[in-house]
Length: 509
Image 1 (cartoon, rainbow, N blue to C red):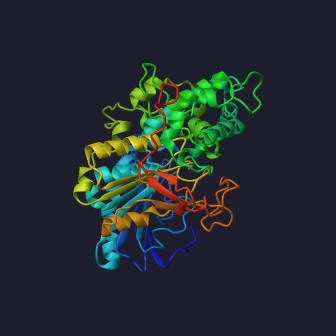
Image 2: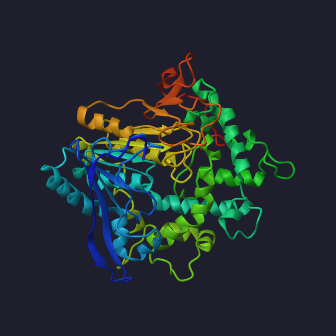
């Protein structure tokens, strides 16, 4: 993983809290792996994994797109787990305790064990402890910051789906919208759903966003840095051509624009309640990962998670159809059920999946802990706007001396897209926690041809293969200084956001 080899280390695998479920009769345990390097730096890192867990991934502690390094190579002892169940299917959600382990309790069960293993190995407990992950791993990190703040000194959360059940519900609602304009009716699979807005049409929208917003940061360089100003000036109805005849990839129909506006604004319940979050217009909308999340995941991963992990009671696995569930289950009922509980499932989905009070992190702050969050602006499943809302709430309810938030223009879900998505935030977090060195701009690189961490095929061909940009702490925006190469971060400076024109009901989302 990455450009650095795996150093000499001791690998420990096992499981704790093995049991047989009284509900579904299956055997459950919290599986884990620990890797403890010979040259230990005194630090512990809990690695949060993605998706619905179910497998113990290599405990390397790699973060950022195409990482050049990882925590194990830097000398951390690293822990990874399966979240309390084995296998990639969502049926574990039939067992109430497996739900709770996946949501938060596996972290609480493993952390004391991991620290004891470190003490047995090295003769002392960790000097500092960290938690890092992206996607569901970012959610785990946020939950750890809120529930287990006494156990961790630094939290690094990428694309944190801390409202994961809401995001999945909104994604199902989005699939319903796409089905309205699919060229195949009725829709019976994700390939047919993908005819709603084709890859060519997505690229068209992305190109029009770029044309309207690229120069807002004073550089026409293929990146939309001033995200907020872009939302005020880009108008889907006016800035993308409307088809006067057949769809041919050079235009969108009026119905397609209506559907896309609903999805970008954020789907709502029938009484007008926003289910999850709005999404910003960004060049990443044309990236290859978007259809996988909006079409395939909606009918497969999200429908299964909603049916079995987050609904009370769970769906019947016999004859379950993800496509049918995604396209026909009542959205209002799905949404309301996320907040329900009963005698068997004693915690609602929104209780066991999310931090108890996401913007109140007094516990972590008061013990000197720090949290850094990064999020791709082009992320199609967890919205950067939701992370922005969280950060504004933290500033309001907890303070600004312990938290930083970074938007990554063009980047999709955790990595990829037309973006500079290669960066090392863990080192900056350590510097902040242990040396009091506050992080400011963080230099990120594109992963063009020859990149040691893995090539990102969506890096535009007219970019330098090793282009760099500063990732600015919110709300600052990277602006071109007016001179110097457009390929290097040193030609840009982080400044307060551009005021832009006054928003109106058509432009502002």
